[in-house]
Length: 244
Figure 1 (cartoon, rainbow, N blue to C red):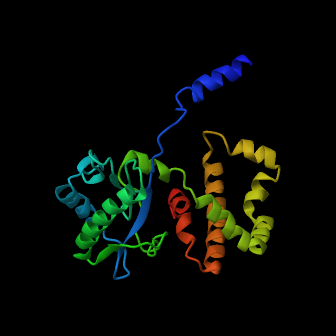
Figure 2: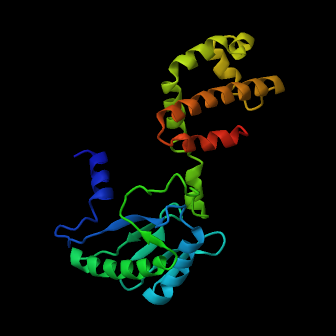
Figure 3: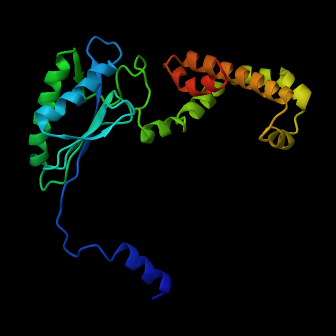
């Protein structure tokens, strides 16, 4: 057997037991919803996480940049209750268990406690998958580096931008034929890519590329509006960067 195969077996298979015990791992995520159909109140859900340690016996494992609890942990069951990316989604990450019934019993107790507390402010956990009021919520990440980092990826901004332009393809083609940008800088795309990927642009280059980008972004936004699926919000990171 080759040396590389031996090393791979040692690295990945050495610690695997021949007859391992079988355990169950369960994670569940749910949106927290304002039952009046409005945006989820951030203060209501933050207050929930301040309340839960006193009634569930959980410890505060993590806090956000403002000292609000965002992750709670039970050292006995190894269960964790946390915000998942945003303050509008709650996650239950259960410790390992031998059967589903163990988890079900704890989950039912957690849910009853949480629903009772949220109900005081006309909020509730609902099993809707995607948050039903996502377009009304302040969709910002939990104030914690791990989650704030995700915003830098602008996950759906590129997809929304291209989708909007695709819907508006006829107008896009007309714009690209008439735009002053190509009249000034030409249509040698290889050269343009080099020219505008420099670390330092001239004032004229920067002004031209910003105007060009704004026009394209406007076309993309118009295309998304035509789809009428409330997708314009995904362009927000690009609009912010361009000062729109």
